[in-house]
Image (cartoon, rainbow, N blue to C red; front, side, top):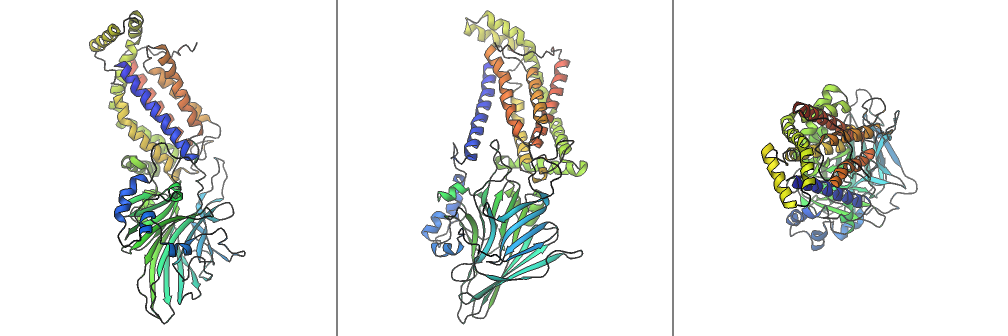
Length: 564
């Protein structure tokens, strides 16, 4: 049974190494070892594509070729001399381009740029930008030979900046008449709000009936977020949500391979562009039928959008479509108030059912203590308290195993040439002493999903960015600049290892110490908040295990194995 227990631990360790290698492969642009991210959505995508969509559209989930050309984002889309309009609220500094009336720049004034853990960083984070090094913009227009996102427009601005007592300002862009149609875009920027109201007025100035199609899209290059490292990867790319198909992510790699799968049509939801901590999303009116699409262009720019049929527009008539545009942080409590399902851009994966209540509890604790570092510590304390009796059973079993270790070692040495008799003798000792070799393993295995969920909560929460804890830790989302926390975590890991039963086999005993050392190396590059969580968990585990061992009379010796 002891061999079974060690085999289980080795299996967990081996699977962890394979998963880490898989993430390293993905980070470096290689194909994943197991399966692509879009594969699980194939059935939903196929079911969502109606017969009215052309064969090419159903296969690729892109707009038909006739309209795709109008939505391309060529490298030279920006004119030599741009006419830019900048407005500012208390949370956003926005830059619009008169070419198409597009949003080409957005700074989040309440979120500082990545500062690498350095104090005194006050420069706001830039989310949207159109520069030679990076492109991430918001576009919209009418498909076909009508005003689109590369049509010159005339800006009209109500105010450059929100003043005291002013709750909103408007930026309006009026196009020339193209194809007998004029398009007017009106952005409403509101105080303390990352969501813009965007109204589209489509005017038929011709003497014929028109059938305009409105598209809204997000365009960016394939660069990953700066906060990613080779040791952990978060999703960067488009995502779609609808009431029918729920949340569906689309990788840049799948778009490149023309293998993207998602709901081709819907009447609800949004299209988003997601990266670590932040997102943008177009939200069309509920009930508005739309076709969703993705595309990649020769310039290396990816687009994801929705196209809505506006129906017949008689001569001289005007049709208005009211949409919303979100540009901001993945703050879960705020996203829930914007539109149903938007909180899913903060993606916890398969541990969502556990992660969401853990985040809720962490947020409540922070509201009480006012410091995210201490909120992490208190949350781990509460989790350990909730599992106290389950852990106690595990540590009692390990304490008995440690007390029996000298006896088992002597027996193995005595019967090393008689493996069958040795196994029978070992089982007899376990029965007499009422020890279950798996008793220390199973309770801990039960808790693993909870701590994985907490891991993703801390990794995904934008609240950790530039959040100080104490002294030198000024940013819980970046690594400890002096590596003090990882060193402390390594020490607690070794102490915890010393409290566990020593395997009778000498080689296994050595590996039992080498494994924590290899595991600890990764934490030197992990965010300080994650390392703090692990230190707190280790410390509480050591205290509880020491208390139980002492109560059982198990001798507390910290003996390193011989590495000769």
